[in-house]
Amino acid sequence: MRRTRIHPAAATAWALFLLAFVLVPRLVPDEAGVRAALERLGAFGPAAFVLAEAVQVVIVPIPGQPLEIPGGYLFGLVPGIVLGSLGAIAGSILAFAIGRRYGRPWVESRIDASARERFDAWLGRGHRAEWAVFWLMLVPAFPRDPLCYLAGLTRLSAGRFALIAVIGRPVGLAPWVALGAGGVAAGLRLQIVLAAAVGIVWLLHLVVGRIRPARAARGLSPSPIPSNGDPNA
Image (cartoon, rainbow, N blue to C red; front, top):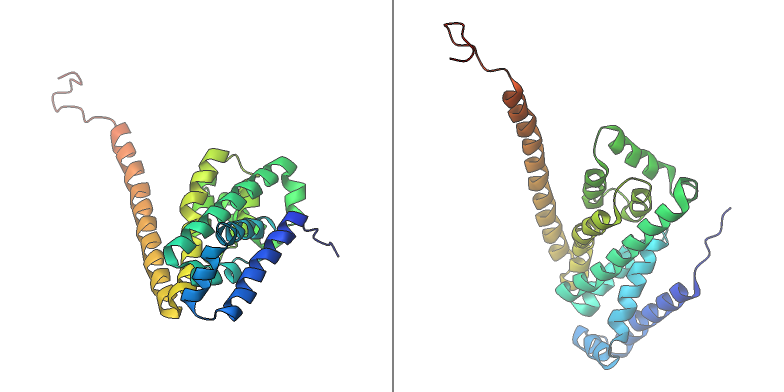
């Protein structure tokens, strides 16, 4: 069985974050007290949260929800989304670069076969790499962290992937942060709103995809010949 080696910096980040999350609430159990304690720590609390979020993206088996839910409780909705997004985006770009650097054999040895097959199926249906990565990053059922490694195997440029991560990562983690910041109802409401927004964008994409070929076909069709038989009339 393959063992995953954890970098000392990653282990330190996790230890510091868990220390702040477990011990501080016990000392000051109410939310206002927890935030006051984090403010006294200065940049340590937010920095540890950002670093831990980035690390969990790079180390694929670690899920993000155990970080994102307490992040909403500790920092609030908007700061939690901003901090979590910074870490997730940085980790996504790093995972993309690692996948591109070490290639398919290395990625396939570490990514679950079902995720690889689903990604390849999207590409096999004719989707361009950027669209496949973009939509899969928005789909809740698809694992986003392995997706970053798989994206590195495509012809997708690093700049376009970074743009996709900037858009997709906040959408993916926002409901979990909302769950910690405002409870189950807030998390569900945000999830519904984001799902509806993604659905509208997807419908617009389908409509535009149908309109463009139709217009192109009409533009390429030959002009009707006048009844007098002279094409130059």
